[in-house]
Image (tube, rainbow over all chains, first blue to last red; front, side, top):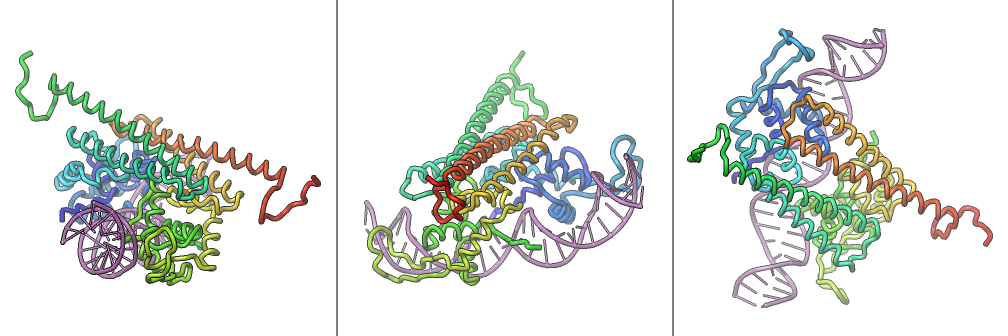
Length: 204
Length: 204
DNA sequence: TTCGTCATGTAATGGGTTACATGATTAC
DNA sequence: GTAATCATGTAACCCATTACATGACGAA
């Protein structure tokens, strides 16, 4: 039932390859530099994923055994690039606004590729995540309130710190949402857009 | 070798049951209230885990079909309690100071049960986690420094926010470590301890 | 020549999620 | 009597991890 099993890794690979073709080793480094603070992938995850994506025709390999490679960079074995199908798939994934898009992992990756995401989708994802986090805040607050649940001080401290972290992210989201809305309003006033569906432009 | 496959859930269950016997449903609530901000487990994870732990003799079920249940609490089907083996296992797990203890998940659970953990182990885990996080900070900082890696502003913002989060946790750990050390020093001056190996006590 | 990093993989397994299925008890 | 919550489970699947294995290339 419409359950597009995402797999953070798949999305991340497609997203990175959309920016520019790369080979596995490089991909992994970029991956861990972009998502660095949250997640780390090893080769044991990446290579099987690349094989899978290739088999599904979403990416393709351009093997260059010992080609020119003008300046910069050692010679590479297999360079992967996004296929047309892959690009389509990427757009589909980046258009999702459901749970996958606001849960911890999924959100991080999607946010990293917000540059390739439609503005309205961005907003919905940010808001989705915010309300998700607000639920958590509520849950922890409730738990903190029920002090009868005799908790030792460490458990309490953990909850307190966790709560603060989540609240902090909510504030961050608030700022992001505000600035998205502002940008939206401004671009509506003077549509300087490129490649966008041009609404009736105001006579200058 | 020696790879004691932990499984956050297993440890969490043992830890909670060490405090007091409980049945599955209750266990799950406590679980998500204690670890609330970080992780959530569903029944689909919990019950199989309980069966597994039972099979391994680490916990046991006390079925009370419709017993007295004096005050407070609805009648429960299966109440789980920690066995002697389970307690031993729990102590082993809580004594670990390796990767399992300072990686995201493992750390959270272990911290929640610090009350049941030896003071020296606590300190080593806190320090282990701190140095782990410091590595991450370094990695992200390095990535931020290499501005050549043309990143769009969203990716950048994600990295920036991630970095701040990690730095924040490092500060938190610093405080915790300091207060652990202080408590340690104080208890060394006047050993008011119970159940501890009594060093030569100072004549009052 | 040896070390570090670049570079690519595989096999086995793991730990947990999702979705489904069921029924008892309590509050309204 | 009906809805919410309590309460217990199973089957299928998934995404990734761990540990291992291999080798070329450049710098010291």
